[in-house]
Image (cartoon, rainbow, N blue to C red; front, side, top):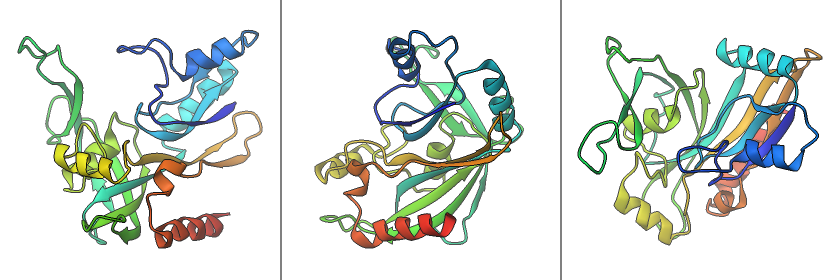
Length: 242
């Protein structure tokens, strides 16, 4: 296996206007490697833990764990507003759709995801668990915000972004499901990317069967925005889980 701390703004693979992603960079850097494949994916705008398999047997075993929900994937997200303490489980089906293209015809624009009724023909079950780590305001801003630890039990496209936005608390800096004017205000405060980070990943090693727990620290461009008490909350949480 290879475990990476992917930076925001880097696609995991080429396509959709991107010719060179993480996996292409790895293959170019390791020309002697016989096998390198992504185990899972992260949005281009999301930073954090990413797994790459160096053997097909590892790829198959790990993807089976992801599919059967035997892995633990926890993200850090800063959201708008004061997240309700009672709201701990989001169990709302999702469906993909395409925005109208420049010619006004559906199927030509960007991909989006929305919450739908369970009877929707394209509905996919999605379950997200939420825990509040800190309630805060950013320096120079009076708007209440919440730092969340978000664990996903399913791996749907844009799942965290859509679930949190549909609950009325979009992720800070989200250019697809957030508010444009609010995003501009946050950019003036120094937040120039979406505040979503793949923080922790737990799985069973495919060769040794040992429990593996990985953690990617919050990137400096996000951590430096938080007031000291919120950063201290992360440190305390880390120590409790070691």
